[in-house]
Image (tube, rainbow, N blue to C red; front, side, top):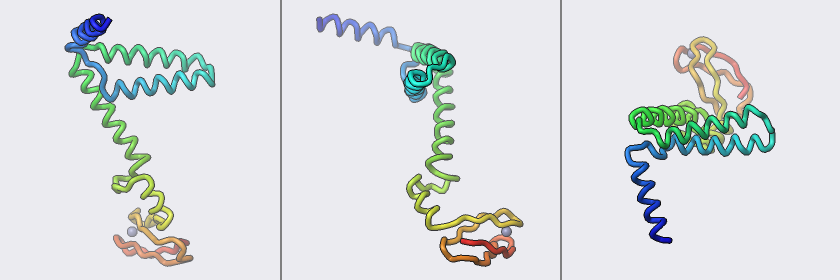
Length: 145
Ligand SMILES: [Zn+2]
């Protein structure tokens, strides 16, 4: 029996040699597949089922693909998009702050935009009606902080 499994593992490794296998994009696809299946359980939409099939087929197509440079490029593209999406939600505007830090930061400060040049100005909250002067173009404007 053990022999059978080791032979199976060997055959699998021979089969997978020179193929793409799993990468981050594959992992994302399998996650998307689970999400689609669960959604479909609740919503029962034909389109979700079709999408799940499409994702499943594409996932296996990638895993067994022999065109590694192409799959590698797709994975890089995915990582780029993911970094950008995480940037939108987790780290705002490249400030380098985490999501939690950003929430605390937003609680403590209010961000105003200069009406003439668009410069963003950070004002501590709870100071009432104040005059703000833009550090860039010196325009003064009144705001509630
Ligand atoms: Zn300004």
